Image 1 (cartoon, helix red, strand yellow):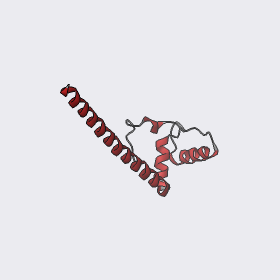
Image 2 (image 1 turned 60 degrees about the vertical axis):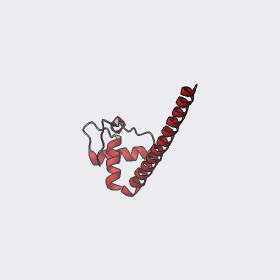
Image 3 (image 1 turned 90 degrees about the vertical axis):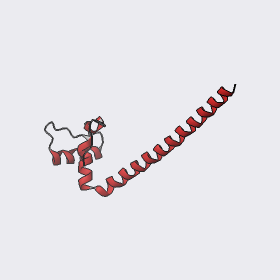
Image 4 (image 1 turned 135 degrees about the vertical axis):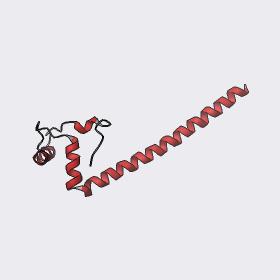
Length: 96
């Protein structure tokens, strides 16, 4: 799985070991990828999860897709409503 890091620089963000789960996950992914600078980033964790635990990652990705799709439809509806209102305002203004 690959992502466009230019579009989402957070993928390169170093993950800190701030709780027991992150400590375990960062160490696990670090052992797997052996980064030269010993820093595990979000992209590495996503890659490991996609390879080793896709039944977890896939529903998360699907849910995000569905939410994004719904948001896009809402945005279209709102945009159309704004255009209708502007058109009505212009008609009223032109009648005066």
